[in-house]
Image: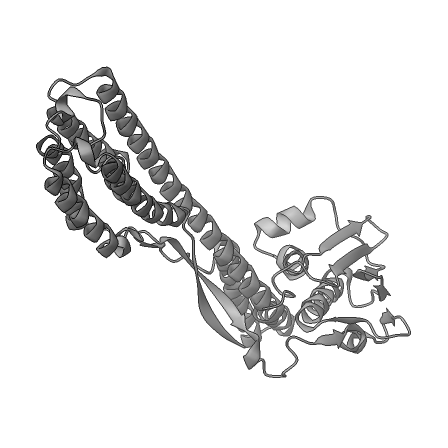
Length: 411
């Protein structure tokens, strides 16, 4: 089974850039309509017409510049703000009475779009810088600023700073969420690898240790070394196998999470995406000391889910053989419910002493924690373990037929 990297891009600020693009176009139309309906008040209408024509050309040509933070460069922001400030300062030249009235400037509320671009690009500090320059230009344009002038200036200043602060908080939240998702993905991968190691390498090392000790001589030395490697490997498994990769950030596009997916198209047996009769996977466990009880009809389950469930049953039987002794008997019961498949593994061993599972997990022995409960959790199911001292142990595994977990989900 091959694995491929999937890139998940998250951005809550991108809709704000799209809104800014629309805002610039709409406010351009608004400024043109204001100038058109009030053309008679301009002593030099050609100045107003020339500036608004340039403003229209500038707005349309630079629409792609305000499509995202990556394309909205510092140089563009400086030029865009210069256009807005020029329009404000040209207003008295086109309308000689502008300083004695509360009429709009030539760019009107289009100027706020330039300030908002600063806020989206650099946060509240950039917004404060741009809005302060706009405020100064408005005061110079009015000559004798009125209460309305101060009101409009203060409104733009506060609104732009607030939006800039919200953008900064949103970016920090994206980075935190991306980090959390990456840690979750790495943890799941670590648990998957730990289960595979527990089901194969660790059990082989434990068997070599036991057999070597029993044989003595050079085999005992080999067993001792195998035991040391088992302890080291268990420690590595329990403390973490997969380091999280560093988060990358694409300016304006949000935080990036890189996750690893399995490519089912390359499964060696070609059964991915199909259903498997669970009975066929569990039947080989039946023997002289293992009784297998199954329904009379097939128990279909998604192939990946069936494999994981069968592996959990195998891990439970391994625990029976290791901890209950070679003479212990075990029973496997499969129940096919309408929405759930339930597999129960019961033995007649001595049971598990209270607190032993927590102690084993602390020692790096993760058979129950990962090979059983971890697998069922990934399938969206549950694993319940009931043990009474002297009366054996019962493990009940429940898996939904439509898996909510990773292993059984459609890709």
